Length: 328
Ligand code: G3H
Ligand code: 13P
Ligand code: NA
Ligand code: ZN
Image (tube, rainbow, N blue to C red; front, side, top):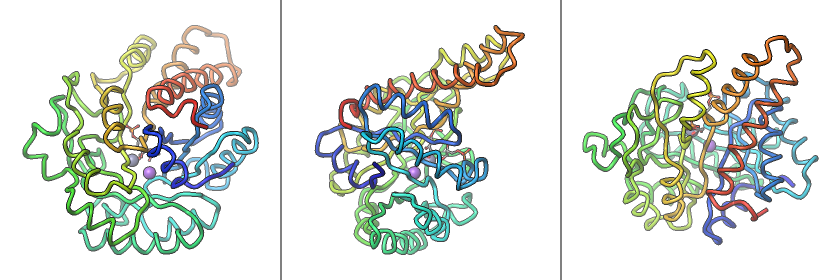
């Protein structure tokens, strides 16, 4: 069934596990996630970004997820809108049936420029008032997540967030988080704790303490009833990068967030873990390998099937590592 995010994350908090939230854009990604969830008996969060809506169109995106709900009636599914840039975007998603929305008021409506705190509180509270009236959950964001878009908060040396004083001010402030939750009533809060979006997170192999674990603890202590969300949580598997390079792809040396660190984050209150890049890498590496090794093949189902199976495998690994396996 389609469920709200609050329902799933409350269960995750009560039982001490985390839920991966996978970005989806097409049929194969939705099928990969559902097959993995079915095999490990995990609840599911699927989310669509603005880019996904642009790529697939909102009706296709919505119906793909509704098809998943119909095909797997025993698995609870959240249909979440990722990084809504304005109340209008969130209202549109709610009206079309999304059971959860993210109002990302950490940036202005252009989704690039950092906003001020009062703006963030104002737009997020507005969305919460409407969403809660119809049983939809709301994720807010506070702090400056490193991202390619803003060029801020990037932390590329692989030495961890706590060690970098200049970046410390970009991490979410626990007192401000408490005030934000009090003023907005969000169900979940995305926090800046040393991650960034995309494949290029760290230029050197992480040596431990990539995540600002002490900061996660401090935030969780102040807002124990608000579910913490970690964006930019792809681990960027080196074996997939190697396959991409072996079969003609060009990707610079890069590292993601080690799964063990995410698991430590979950122990300290992280409940929703956003993953997009890892599925992209899994699918791209499989497609490159398939086409390079089946040179006369021209049926897209063949290479898309391979891509789907690779995506399924990475989803299963995350369901198992984060502890949501067996919880559906
Ligand atoms: O939050 C970022 C997600 O990875 C979505 O990326 O905007 O390219 O769909 P996208
Ligand atoms: P990655 O780019 O690390 O997969 O993060 C995705 C994300 O945070 C979507 O909101
Ligand atoms: Na989100
Ligand atoms: Zn994100």
